[in-house]
Length: 133
Image (cartoon, rainbow, N blue to C red; front, side, top):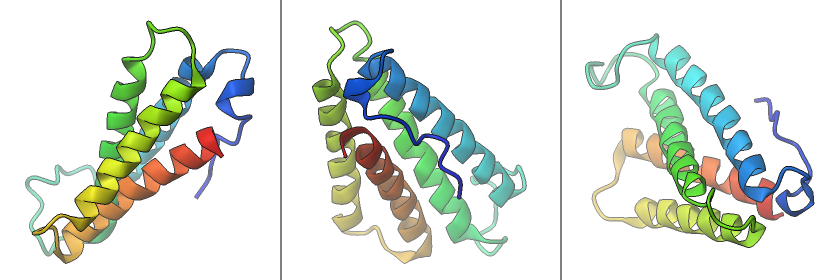
């Protein structure tokens, strides 16, 4: 898996934390949408029968897309604030914490949920590692 987002931490970016993070999220989301389309053969997950193809892989990519969309919306809300990488970090930590809590929620079992939650949590972890670590 390629990681085209290996860049300097947000605080040292000349374009600012919010814009740099927003650009990174959009690129990751586009890549994840491509992987999801490839895994589903372009079919909607709502109409795919449970036994059709690599459901866990498709659900993983679906979870990745969902977490990245959540991150995109959160960072978009920060665009009118003074540029602060701390706000970005807190937003990403909140997203990561929510996905971790979803993993522990009752009733979220089985390969579909496992794939979906793993994809979302992995995406949140990777964003957090890039922008905080």
